Structure formats: C-alpha cells, structure tokens
Image 1 (spheres, rainbow, N blue to C red):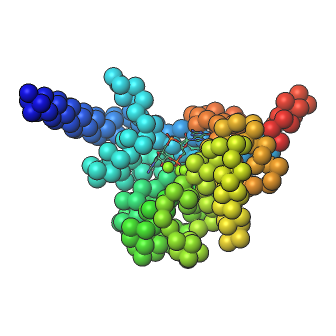
Image 2 (image 1 turned 90 degrees about the horizontal axis):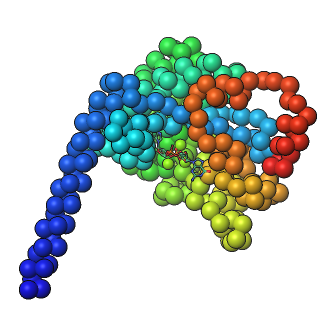
Length: 288
Ligand code: C2E
Ligand code: MG
Ligand code: MG
Ligand code: MG
C-alpha cells in the first residue's frame, strides 16, 4: 500500500516535470518568435548621484511581454536564451536599441548594457558592439558594459582580452552583482574595470543590522581603494538612502527609492536639462 502510494507520488512528480519541461520548450519557441516579431523591448533604470540631483547613466533592461502570459522576467528568459544559444541575438537587440535611445538623451547621460557570460566567449561581440555604436552615431564613451563576476571566472583569459579590447575602444566596463560571485580580489585588480555595482543583497537590512552595513561599506571602500566607482544597487527606502548618504557610502545609486525601470522616452524627459522650480527642490531635499 505504502509502495503504491509512493509510486503514485512519483508518477505525479514525473508528470509535473514533464509539464515543466514542455512549458520551457514552449516558452523557448515563443522566445525565438518574440525576438523576430518585435515583442521584446528595453526599459531603462537611472543611476543617480547620491543626492538625487543628476542622472549619470541608465541601465538597459530587456523586457518580454508574452501575448498570453504577460511579462516574463529577464531572469527567466535570459537563461532560456542562453540554453538555446540565442542570448547573443538578444544582446545585439538590446545594444542597438540602447545606443539609439541614448543618442536622444543629453550628452552627459550614458547607457549601460548587460552582457551574458556567453557573449564573452566569442570575438563577434566586439563587432556587434561596434556596429551598434556606429549605427546610432554614439560616442563609445557613453556606452557601459556590465559583466558579472562569474562571467570572468569561467574563461578568464578570453573574457579578459575581449574586455581589454572593448575598453581600448573607449567603452567603460562594470562588474555587476559584485559580492555574489567568487572573483578573487587579485583578479579584480587585473581586470579593465572602472565601475563596481554592489549587489542589492548588500543593502537588505542595513538599517536593522550594523554588521550588514559594515559589509556594504567595506565593499564600497574596496572599490574606491582600487580607484573604481561604486554603484549601490537596490536601494528601496528613504531610510536606507539616508544611512548610505550619512556615511557617504555610494558614488551612484540605482534603486526604487529614486526610480524603477521606465521607457526610453520617460528617461529623455527625466534628463532634460531644466530650471528646477523651488518647490521641486524642496520636495527633493528629504532624500539628499
Ligand atoms: P541586474 O543587471 O543586476 O539588473 C538590476 C535588476 O534589479 C533589475 O531587475 C532591476 O529592475 C532590479 N532593481 C533595481 N532596483 C531595485 C530595487 O530597489 N529593488 C529591487 N528589488 N530590485 C531592483 P530585472 O530588470 O528584473 O533584471 C534582472 C536581471 O536580468 C538583471 O540583473 C540581469 O542580470 C538580467 N538582465 C536583464 N536584462 C538583460 C539583458 O538585456 N541582457 C542580459 N544578459 N541580462 C539581462
Ligand atoms: Mg546589470
Ligand atoms: Mg546587478
Ligand atoms: Mg543580476
């Protein structure tokens, strides 16, 4: 009796696995279709100076709205694309769109694009990036490229020489999700990197736990000691922002406290140089 019940559980489990597998297969073919039919888009999240007065860069974030399921998170579809060998096509799409959009923003605002670990396995990424810049007529200095620590651990020599080449062409390299991977501090020093984006897990609970905050501060100080800029990601509340600013513990801030990701046109309006009304300034002063 017990046996048959176990067996039943097992069959149910297998059935569920099958369903999930089919679901992923289905999603994969839908993703291929989405890439060809223009169902992918790009949103942008601003990185602000800590006082919130100026946007220095906006991160391009891929978006997919599935016709039946609605929005599929990039954490899901980027992984599917990697499994399908399709991720560089998504990178190309995001790069082209990002360069085009950035060329409509004020000169002082850069755009940052995420690269997949698989993009750094092949030299063609250098041409893809170059083409996107040329098409948009964008100064390479306005393009940042984000790579994760694990990107660089997989195939350090190849990845590093590609990044060296991109940097020689004038782009800025950022390490994304810093502190969640396994990069050694010595390899960090050898990489052609100018920006460290400290993972948002370092911000969680900094108000309630002094040790958490010390960890965040050490990561920021490490970046600065190496002459790098520290972007603190995932700042959600005014309390967190105040604590960070009281200790001057960020060079740039990217988080919901200032802004969620938004369409390119909204970024254009946001960054438009304008004379601030006194009321705007006053209402902002609480976050400074
Ligand atoms: P990421 O590169 O670390 O991007 C930051 C993520 O944190 C974004 O999620 C953003 O919406 C989210 N975020 C920003 N501020 C806050 C905050 O205050 N609180 C919280 N809870 N979240 C915040 P998103 O857009 O869902 O992207 C997730 C990940 O998917 C990205 O993490 C990146 O690894 C990947 N991704 C997104 N677009 C692309 C792309 O075009 N190419 C590649 N290769 N990966 C991408
Ligand atoms: Mg990123
Ligand atoms: Mg990140
Ligand atoms: Mg990430």
